[in-house]
Length: 199
Length: 199
DNA sequence: TGATAATATTAACAGTGTTCATTAAATTTG
DNA sequence: CAAATTTAATGAACACTGTTAATATTATCA
Image (cartoon, rainbow over all chains, first blue to last red):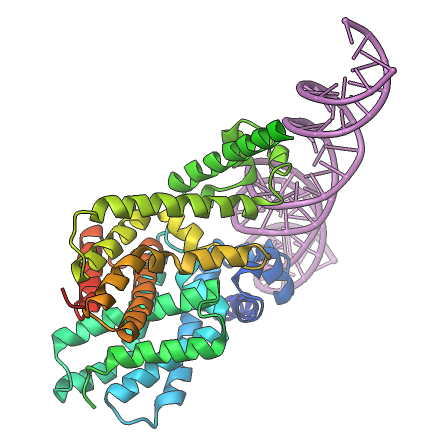
């Protein structure tokens, strides 16, 4: 039963890639079972032989996008020395990724994946994501007395709220009104939040 | 042509009230043209004689809900003396309103009203709403040297991002996991942001 | 090759927003 | 008041959506 497994994974992969393409390109509003299936080269009904519904399919994309985003963040920040500056850079790279792919932000924070059982996992994955990206850095900062465990916890929570708010307002409400102003605002906010951490 | 105008406004009102009822009760996911029309006591097609599409109808609800929210905030905070404590109370009452009616939060911050012409107005109305609720208080604080104009501007922006992020994460991602923890977290965050304003 | 198992597909259902031709009601005119 | 005309309400239809079930096709194995 080895070949069967390989084939099944391959088929899943076709649908997942198609879904990811649409999310990155046209965004969440263009996601539909028929649209995905057409791009994958199969009938829409075939999709249901491999995923119990479209939400399960979309759940796999969350994992893939997190991996991709993590790579992007690492590339952007690997040369920066540890400390508050690196935390700032990681957070900004995280924001960049979602600005580049607004559909992925919508998938992560707006799409309702909540109701069904396996999707509690998706929510957990999403809300802990920024913490996971910054975990190593926070450990460094605490170890080197640049901040305390208590402050770190509060600042982590602030960062999650602030980044989520910034992205939602810019992507869905065009606030601030252009990208230049968004960069300025988000930069100021992130810097201000992390400036109480030592360097 | 006076009677005609009155009748038209009355008809619009029926649909608007029906839409508001659904948004407050079942939320945005249960909004549909047929659902609204049934509750209003008319055919779904009749709706299109009074609104060019469902987005225009929903736009009227934004105005009404802002008025209602403003009343709620005033009631909750009128007895609190001016200063940072009052700014905190206003912000928390603003949050309370959306926690009570998650469908209205979705309408304000998640529903895409963006594309069409008249809906730039909706976005502007929404992103300036918290500023309008707190405007009087900020003027008091600046006048009495409890803060500076520059700090006020930055804190206003922080408040908008933070409240929006808090609500999105709690309503859509159940983070924190229960209401008690949400109250604690949001309270801490708001207090911390506004504590640099004098009393 | 023929039977069987696995997979892909078409048809269908119930839902969505929207448009248009038609019906019903109200108003104006003779 | 009755007839003609304007106005408003509606049902049918279209193009979508997700999902299911029965059918058609393909692959596997005796």
